[in-house]
Structures are given as C-alpha cells and as structure tokens.
Length: 111
Length: 119
Image 1 (spheres, each protein chain N blue to C red):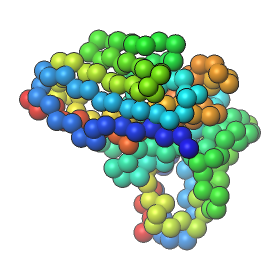
Image 2: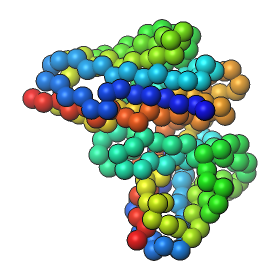
Image 3: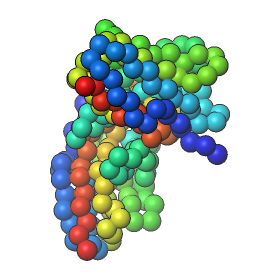
Image 4: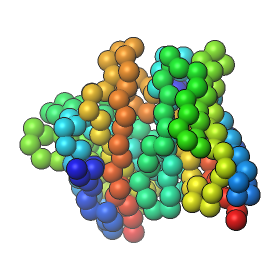
C-alpha cells in the first residue's frame, strides 16, 4: 500500500548548523509533498510544500528538493535556531486527496 | 479569519462510552479530513468528507467509528464503545479545493486537535 518512510527519527544539531531530513514514498501517482512542523501539544503547521512539476523550492532558511524518479524528497533547514526545535513530518498525496505521513523527525537545536 | 476549530480540546471517556469530536473547517472550505495521531507517531489518515458526502473512508476502522459532515454544522467523528486503544490525538484538516485526479492538491490546514483519553 501507500507508504512514506522518513529518516532520521531524531536529529540533534548545534545552533547555526544545517539540518536535513529525508523521505521516500511508494505511490508513483503522488504529486504533492508538504512538510509540517509540530511543536509539543500543538497542531501540525505547514512550513513548505512542493508539487511534482518542480524539483526544488526555497523559502528563506527552508528548502525542499524532490526527485520523482527516485521517489525521494528532502527538507533542508539552514542556520538553525533553537526555535526550530520540533517534530517535522513529511507527507505525500495519496488517492482522493488524503496525505500519507512519515513517522516524523524530532529535531533538537542546541544553543 | 478563524482557522480550523475543533472541540473539545480534551476528552476523557471510560471504556464502553461514546466519544463525539467536532470540527469546523476554515471559512470557505467545504472539504474535511480526519487524522489520528498515536503518541510518538505520525498522523494516519482516517476519512475525507465533503458536505453531506463521505468521499474516502479507507483509513477508518470498520467497527465503532463513523463520520459525517452535514449540510449545516460541524463535521463529527463518532467513536462508539471506546476502548483504551482509541486514546490518541484526533486532528481534522480542511481544504478549499482538493485536487481532481491528476490535478493539484490544495493545502490542508489543521485544527488544534482533540486529545482523547480512554480510562
């Protein structure tokens, strides 16, 4: 069935370093790939998304890349700050508009 | 501009009771999705509804769970005869114009969630 795998499950970086989170998906029909940030006890919040007709998208310190051939997409955060600490989820669109989520990456940014 | 609203935010039920979770989509949105999040896990799709129609319920357990989105009022996720394994955070999301087959999928905005605890 439809599946999204996300790595790593935890990531610890020093403030100012870069962080990279990688996801792979199984459904070749997926065409929309959002990334959500979730702080403890809060709702998932969209931070960036990419569609299958684009290979890369950037928004300030955040960028996402997509390789449709390899069914692989990644989130890149540069110049990390302590407030970037949260759980990050990737997702891929499935049939009937549902989102299939990865298991999440717990990012800790240490001052 | 109010976002997606969910209530209650926290719900405690004893085994065998019923749980009703409500979701009001963003203004202008007529498509609602329900997801379940177990502790330390990702979100799992349950059901996708439009006004008065269930479009995809492939992620919803066949027994005890039901969902509706009436013409008037919020979407309701109903869990009958709750068991401890139903304890989770239930999030709903809404979108304005979900993608047609092969077309773009519009952004899903999430509500604050309802945290259900079954004793």
